[in-house]
Length: 80
Image (cartoon, rainbow, N blue to C red; front, side):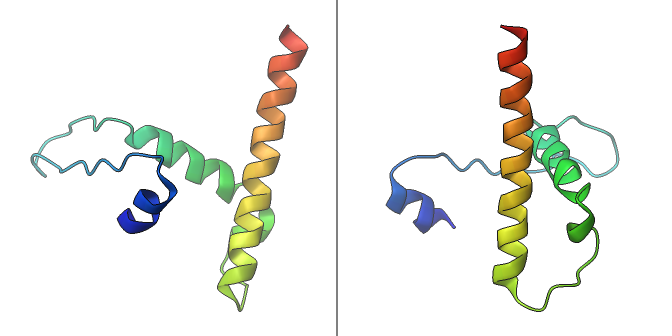
């Protein structure tokens, strides 16, 4: 994955290590990823692993993200 990001020329990979497993520590940016996964899993087709091909799953994840981004854009334009 790091090679792919380096080839595109944009993006930054930051690996966050857990300091201690015995106590709760807020990790930076982790909530953004978990929130996005929760939004994606709201789509009925992506709730379970029904698809045979990974290309199909990738296409449905892309469609789910397009739907999420369009909703955010619509909300931001209505407020302006």
